[in-house]
Length: 564
Image 1 (cartoon, one colour):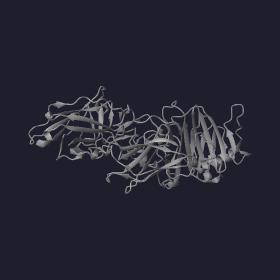
Image 2 (cartoon, rainbow, N blue to C red):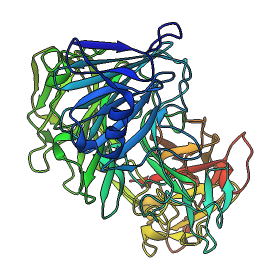
Image 3 (cartoon, rainbow, N blue to C red):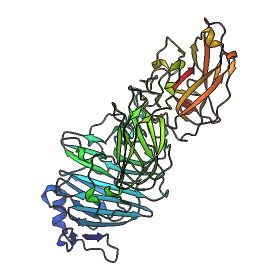
Image 4 (cartoon, one colour):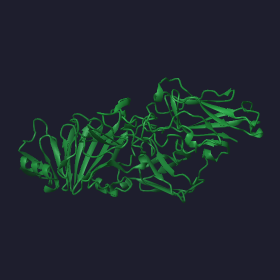
C-alpha cells in the first residue's frame, strides 16, 4: 500500500516532479505532461493519482478525474468526460460549509485510492475505484463540535435543466420566508427544502441531461437521526449554481438525539446519457467487502453485523404499508413488511439492543426490544398489532389514523410548497360530519391563519345521554401550538405542550414530528339534547409563543374522532 501525505511547507514537492500512485515505489514523471493528460480526458490515463502541488489529482481510469485539496479536503474539481462540473461562486464541494485547514493524506490499495481528511474530531474519506465513475464517501463525526453533518457537491450553474420545487431564480423570484423560501411571479413557491421525499422514498437524487447524469446515492443512514420518514433538503438549483446533498444530521425538525460515528458509503455517481445510477450502489444492495481492508476509522465489516427476521405481523390493515424500524443511541435501521404476510428482514445491523417500532403508515402501533448479535440472526415469531387507534369504535372519525395528514386539504401539496402557494386551497372553511369530505378539512391549523375551525355533528338520544372521549391526533406542532377543544358551551382544559422540534416544520415541507394523541373527556352535559340539532366542536390553537401568519403557532392533523 502506497501512502502520500500532503507535504509540509519544508518538504513540499517541486512542481515539476510528483508521485503517481502505482505501487509502493511510485513513478516519477513530469507534472505538466500528466496533469494536462488528466484534465483533457479521463480515459487518456490509467488509474492512479498525482500531486499538482495544491491537490491530489485522481484518475479513475474510466471517464472521471477528481481533485482534492491538500489544505482543507475540499473536492476542487470533478471532470467527467472532459467537462468540469464542480464549483459555483468560487466554492468547492465539501463537508459542512468547508472544514478549513485539515490533515489530508492519500493511499492506494490495489484497485482503490483513498483520501483521508482529518479536522479536529471529524474524519472524512473519499475513495475512487479503478474503472468506475463514482466517488465513494464516508464521514465520521465523533461529537457535536460541528452543528450538522452533510456533504454538499457544488455544481456549476446551468449545467442541468431543472424546474422542480427545489429550484428557483433569484433574479425574478422573491424571498418570502427566512431567506430560503421563494415565491415566483406566478405565485408558486420554491425552496431547497421542498424535495417532497422521505429518506425511505429514494435511493438517489440528482440531475440529468442528454450527456450525463450526476447523482448522490444515499447511504443507509445508520448513524443519521430521524428514522425512515425524516424529510430534509436533498438538493437545490438556482441561477447561481446547484447543490447536491447527503444530509446525515440537520438541526431542522429533528425528532431524535444526534448519533455519532462513521456514516457511509454514500456515492457521487456519474452516468452517460443521463442514465440512472447502478442499483448495485443502492444502500440495500451495495457490496462493501472491498472496504474492509482500507482501515477506515469506525468501519464494521459484514461479519461484525447481525440480522433481525420477523415471521409476520397480525392485525394489520391491508390498506397500509407497514414499516419496521429499529433504533438505539448508536444506530437506526428500517425495513418494509411483506404486504401479504407481514414478514420482514433487516440485515447489516450493528450489534446491540434496539427498540423495534412497527409503523402503520407513519404511526407507531407496536414496540418491543430486540437484541442483535454479530454474525447472528434474531428470529421473531408473529407479532400482533394491538395499539392501532383505528381499532376503537367511533361515533364519527375525520381522516385515518396513519401518522400523516394524508387525505386532508392541501396535504399533498405541502411537502413541496409553502402554505401561501397559489395552488393551495383556501385554508378556512368548516366541516360537517356526514356530508363534508376529508379533503375539505385543513391538514394544518394556525393560530393566525385559520384558527377556530368548527366541526358540526349530530348525536342520537342514546349517544347524547353519555360522556364520550374526543381524540385529536397531531403529527407535530409548531411553536408550542396545541388544541383547546370546546363543544357547545363546554370548553376543555388547555393541554400541556407536546415535546416537538423547536424549528420550522409546516412551512419547510415537513409535517413529521413526535406523533401525539390529545384526549378530552367530554361530559354528557355538553351535548345537545335534541338529536335534530347540531353539536358544534370548535378547535382552537393555543400557545404561549407568538408568531404571525404561517409562522404563528400551528399543528398538523393525523385524525380526529369521537369514541362510542
